[in-house]
Picture 1 (cartoon, rainbow, N blue to C red):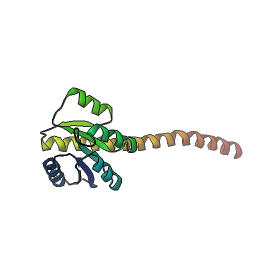
Picture 2 (cartoon, one colour):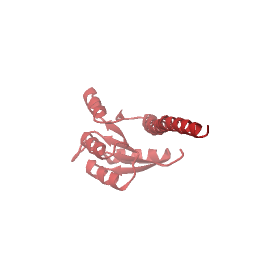
Picture 3 (cartoon, rainbow, N blue to C red):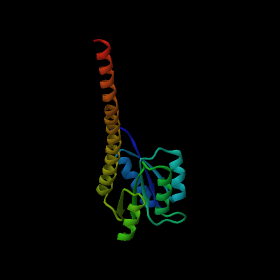
Picture 4 (cartoon, rainbow, N blue to C red):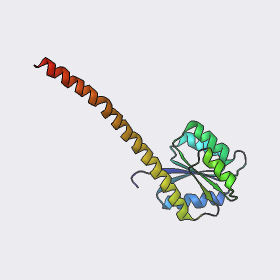
Length: 158
């Protein structure tokens, strides 16, 4: 991995936070942890987070509310929702609110790794696509300008 990626784990269960943090370190990510949505927002203010792995059901602020608040301030953070009680309704709601994907507890570490990598690849591809679109627009605008300049120069040099 060329640059370190910061991943925020938000879960009210300490063992889940510790396990994911340890696994993320082993996968060369820089983990950050929060026990609820309020703490997570504080971490997001202090750190440049690339991915949020958030439990759906937590006291004080649930994962959906955290997702809404994150999306209101930063649309680039990849958000993965985690829950021990998966339903189609909650999965659909999380995706509609802006979550990239959904993980069910207990999860396999390989599944977590794959979903984080896919999400970051998509984020990188999106950034590359925006750059390519910018270059295309610059070319489209500059070609007519060069044609006009060429016509003007040709008429002057006759």
